[in-house]
Length: 487
Image (cartoon, rainbow, N blue to C red):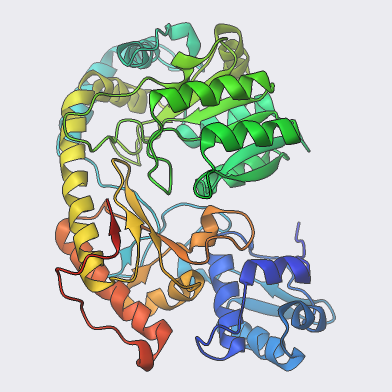
């Protein structure tokens, strides 16, 4: 079913088209391409009529008409006689409409839109061990919506090792962390219910909230005295939110880490407002601090078994193609989630679950390899950006997969639109928020090998020069000038 977007809403998503980055019609067309490419404007959406959009953007109707014509000529829109203009995702993009996920990239292009590391060197051996172990499973029927007992036990043991006693009956195995988020939200919130989300946040979480029919309430939790442990409970009191989706460990995209005191205050204050904390631990094992002691899971600070629901998965610590995730909850809630999941699928792939068992049994070895590579990539990327784009500012995170960069200007969408000309794929800052926020931000992952990161920064510099124009073309700064880094 197709739908339209209002002029005011599209204008808010596109932002200022008078930014001096070329003709306004081209800036508008580029913004619509980016919105369609990253899924915020699904293919088949009817664009507003020219006159109301022109009024909302403060430009002429002729400018809007020219932008629409450029989109049609380039394959990003089509006209339907008497019905208006509709956006479409060109076949050449190879993407999946409306989905925030890595897809095919042009040969030689570098994907900086998604933080998805390659598998660690030790994973093939674990896959081979899982195949050997799987022979014993072939004598059975292969079904089991509860997940393999050995896997549920291994996940429970990992929580217990981290300081949160957990039994297998509290674990629900899912097809990745995103599916885990989806079934929990379906359990906690219904159509029209409010769900708090940190602002910025993980793009797919926003999509899942919308798919559940719930209303995402973005809450700024960094800067101007705001912290998660103060801002989220305050918003919960004001909105009567049913749940709050959050990341305490190396938040995506900011990399922020909450200490134990902040975690305790956060979950306890949310519970007093009747808001369940849905804690995403996807990045919890990606602590890049040398010799650092791990923090307790948020659920360890909860007063009651239903105050916190924890989700996690193996896509970041192991490999994105290993679609195994989990939910950790109180026994009764876990049983309800297990029944909900069983109605949607009869079983998860047995071989993938066996690989997950092998990964969890050798997690410390895999983690040491992963952390070493990521730490090297983080430090290299920070140095390259500081030397090449010294006006960009960022905090070097203690973990995670990316730098959250302040560009110093509202050019994120323009950079994303220009990037393919320079062999890059970028994700605009607004994709990590609601509306037109974060137009001055860009998430840059350090998941690529060192030489690729170095080349990616060179291409970023060329993209910046392309967007800024000849008058602002930057030369590489003195390596000693590191004004862009905040440690």
